[in-house]
Image (cartoon, rainbow, N blue to C red):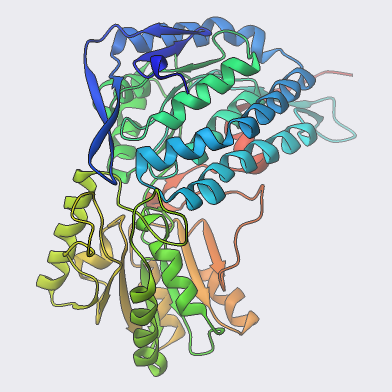
Length: 478
């Protein structure tokens, strides 16, 4: 990655100086050291980027599918060639262990590019309403898109937004998280190297109060796609309402994981690993484990044992371990919620507020488990976004469903059972965009998104492309 680009923005096919004098340190959370500085953009920077995207929209929106596929396949090749650079950027900017960064974080971006190319080749942008009708249904690019992405899965979310927007024929302005901006800058370099037309893709770094707010209320931005906190999502909806633009939100979660007495072997241990992976910084993590009372004590023992085996260590080391959380702000929030859990009367069964041994510097938190939790406690309601699990007992299937659904969120929920009929029955009653049964992952191209305050819209596959399209009916064609 060219470090000269860190303080610049990518606008209209060139790396340009910011109109702002404000700089922000990019901190490596593993050692609390500054690894770079980025410019924090302002309204002038954003206006230039939006103007560039608007000017390029007509030509790009009328480009052929073949031309878009060609450029996306070229981008994929460049991504593969610079794979290790992306891994290093993610490892440094968010403290993600390098093996996990490579095998999961960086790989996710490549997987999304691959799948969206396949979906684009198959996508039907024009169709006859039915064989007897002279009406045609046309799907057209929505226009200029503002893309706001988070720090916890940086290139994953950039790929989930930018690639389908490009495939649909939209132009865009990307604002990556200012906490983890290096992966976004590297992605912009890849776009430039691939040769996308000037102005189709633009990048402006900045914070939510500045650039983010201007994106959501900008009159020349036709759509906003945002991934982040529910609090920020509400503000974006309010700002966007003035221009009635489309808003696609992927927000927080507080996943429930129902462990029935007939759960398959290793379900509990796999669930603990799931919660703690990425240092607990995943919006669909199963952070509330509901356990049938007949196996409660056994599960608690197994969960504590598994948590004790999870290693917390430097992201520079190879192996299966977790690293720090992303920032001091995030670290303090998680520690305060752990303290609150103790104050609320939950039993701190593993982990806690003390840093792991030999890791005095960096934002490291031990895998933490609370038992004897009830759903009214703040630790059971708030999205902690760290390696913290609450274990809640239940008596009956209906009680478990009620507890899981008793939340403002609805992103991902989980079921552990050997009874396929039960799994199907319970899954249909859980109010969430995804239900994971016995740890089975989502297939490539399936839709991801939430119910209620976990957001709206869907990302991934043909659904991800459709988010960036308007639907038009044309009558009287023969």
